[in-house]
Amino acid sequence: MSNKTYINGLFIKSKQTTFGEVVSVSINAKTLIEELNKHTNAKGYVNIDLLRRKEADKQGNTHYAVLNEWQPKSDYKAPATSFSTTDDDGNLPF
Figure (cartoon, rainbow, N blue to C red):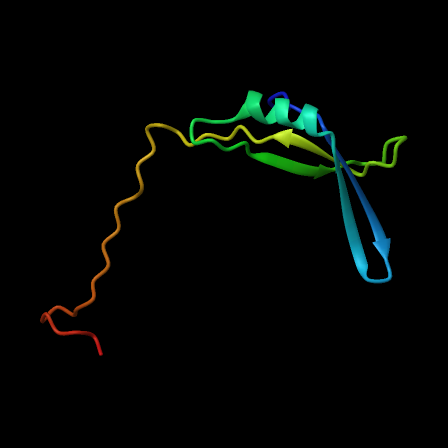
């Protein structure tokens, strides 16, 4: 398993209310902006996964954020598919 790159500046707490689950996110703007600038990809995006902790930490945070570094393989080619919209006689099937 690869090492995770944790995103600093996000603090995430989940709590149950009478209206269902509420997820609260606190953001340290300066720290998060630095993280976003550091991890921006060639298309201008930062892909982040929010994961649930096994247990809440001492501040009550129930989730954490990690950088999603998945990249498609550069040699990937979509499989060739051929769909026929006609029958063997060249007529539409309906």
